[in-house]
Image 1 (cartoon, helix red, strand yellow):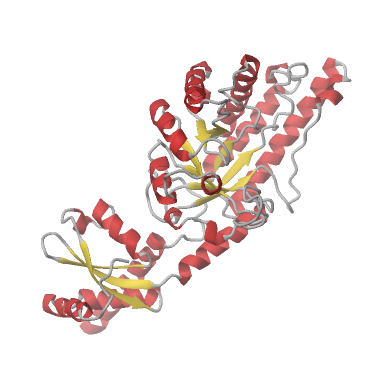
Image 2: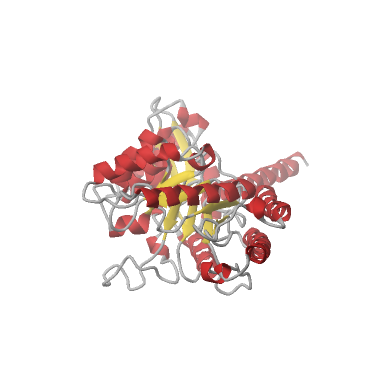
Length: 435
């Protein structure tokens, strides 16, 4: 009876351990959503949908300044008020769809309040006949975001240029950013992302102008503002110094970086961009419509080629906005393919030799990353106080379940038996090459 109980206990422990390892190394069904405030925990990619849907019957409405200009002002405000409320309702429907489909972020259309900052037809929300109801509906969206651990953001149109040599362009840009920050407060958005602007023949001066004009922004804009590398003018290497000096985070667009490269590798740009964030980093992904050898690789495809998704992004606590024309279909496809790609990876049982000559046993399907985590002190309490560690043994397994079982068997070996395993692989060519 005692042996039977022991076996039952062992099996229960193994099941709990296997489940914990699964959630540690592979995104679960709800991996696209969830709060990632530390910016560094494993297995927590949040995919984002941008602005609209391809197939879902969720539509945002707008109007034109010409149409509004033909109307008497009271009638125009009634119409604009109705459009704002419809867009608040559409936003809530969009967020509900995201929450139900493992989409962790939604980018809000800049015209969520139609023609809000137009010089002749613009308005203050308080001018609206239904101003209180408009604000209430948008705040309901914010409550939903918080309750379902989603994220929302804005990406103002290309005419928002903080370093323009034209004072009127800068004035309009500031006005637009302030409007979007007003809505951002209602809906709990933490990012308003813009590009660096033009170079105007002198990049350094243009970047200095960008930094100087940040002082014109309110705290609610500054606390949300980010800057993104583009595909023609500013690379990550151009923007990182200004991000560090101003505290404005870098939204790293890997597609733009591939089109407009610098001396930084994708891995280096990723690492440096992440250090500019005081909250969950946000990155962008897209694929070229005619391939990387096509005539215009900057043009976006309907879907994302999963091979364009940087390996160094996987299992990072980041938001990745999917910039693809198929919208929600592209996000769903990428989410599925990322999970399949992880499940296809080879699992290993490994042994690390610690600085005190003790041996640590573990499993992973990404040996280089796991070794880096150990030596960074983030993989194990045991190795954290025994750094540095060196990979001395690795043994491929058919799948994660087999790896877990083999790990328990290796852990049960004596020190001498573990050393024999290591010695046997040292005699096999290539087994100890750094992965």
